[in-house]
Image 1 (cartoon, rainbow, N blue to C red):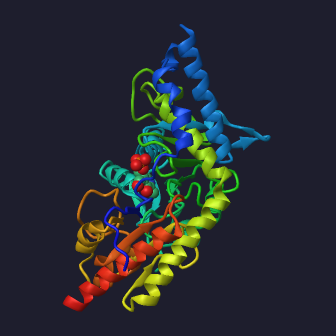
Image 2 (cartoon, rainbow, N blue to C red):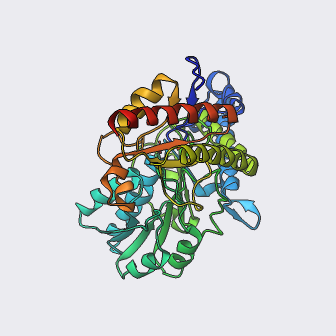
Image 3 (cartoon, rainbow, N blue to C red):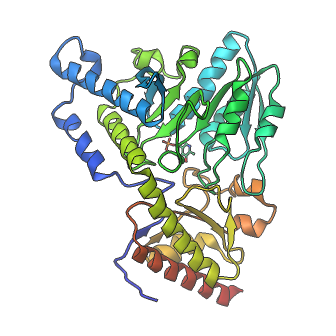
Length: 400
Ligand code: PLP
């Protein structure tokens, strides 16, 4: 094995991505030169140009996710937030508050493997009188659209199912679910598309999605910026989480993060424009890594769907070894950076996603997530594969 103590191979792109230099360039003037507050647009030119720029970014984001009417982007459908955690909360809690106030429903359908940013608001609402159905998934982590249909009842006002899972990379049949939900008057469909943007074709109209969460830092944009797409039919029904100066059409008070918004719009534009090329590249690297691991390690098991999965996701279990030590010590020593379960969860509990696809405790405890990225090379993957194989074999020979 080639060891290179200075080499760093970052395989944790589901946790976050580096900001693309073109995104940084686009953002830069909005820190130091065009730093006006968009709320001052009526007072002076700095405020005016900041306001114009975020309105253009709103249009770009709407364009990037296919939010168009008559061929034109529906800029008003975009609410800028501090990230997808806020977008998910705004969608779920914002709509729940409206439903409660107007007595139009008390039931939510979601899945057992959603991100915490959806699960926790649902639990919060359960404590406040709402009923939540957490749908199970199959052995690959997919939600069955028929199960969604069967769970809809008179009180249902919201279905929230993620487009792709952040741990095992499984892609859900969002179009099918969207078309089912669309048939029910007064039931809205939210999807957390954080990991799917830039990986699969996203068109909110084709997917019949009413609400969609987006995050900047998962698509080579900055951290601390996100957006919630809302169909205009539903936008006025969302109750804001933050009250204040009435920014973002009253749905999200707080001075807008202008550089972040500009960066999010640019990152999304690049993700959409270069999608096929990026997908082909990361898929190739992902397959290269999987081929090495599966050919050389008898014990390795693939988690998630073999085909319907994010092109940059490889989630595997090494059932016989202590993967905490593998990831946090052995691999880190060689500069190979991977993740245990979800990096977004701060706790040490077993992954709630893996627990839904298997009962095998060794597989659950032995799961490691590799998230490939657009700037990696075949050489990086060879180095990472050498390191992983070596370290797993070494541990197995000592403890196996
Ligand atoms: N939803 C999913 C599927 C995610 O993977 C993440 C972050 O890992 C989030 C929501 C939260 O996004 P943010 O970091 O922008 O709050």
